[in-house]
Image (cartoon, rainbow, N blue to C red; front, top):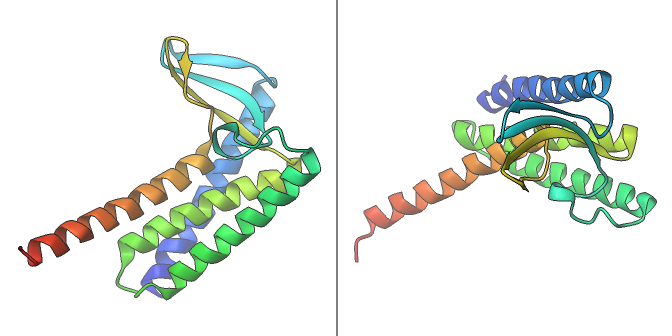
Amino acid sequence: MTRKAAILLPILVVGVFLDQLTKLLVVRHLPLGGQVPVIQGFFNLVHVRNRGAAFGLLANLSVQFAWLFFILTTLLVLGVVGYLWWRLPDSDRLAALGYSLIMAGALGNLIDRVRLWEVIDFLDFYLGRHHWPAFNVADSLVCLGAGVLIWLILTEEKRKDASHPL
């Protein structure tokens, strides 16, 4: 097994498992629209559904169009990210980590969209009356993966700048 695959496979399995398990627990233990304060004034567990994209974007589209649009978009993203992962040198473990996290998160939310026609969100962070849109483990994995890739790009740019002084 390649180093890249040794990174991808456990992240896919564990990431999708944790995403689906946490969503199952929310569905079983928290009614739709319910909330449980965890850290007063900062964090609640909630049970909301999202037919749109990240942060509820495009949630006003027709249900059938939104479902098809988001499934096809997710499949396209998985294909592009999978291709970029496949093209990586085996030694590029950090980039493999970033791409693997993105694929795990995309797959977790894709499962919801195929099964439920929407995504289950349950992590609600806020300060006072200002709430960040609710999200889930899959969303967190995508953001972590993107963060890893952004960090790699920025550190590579700094390294290139340092090696080419004006």
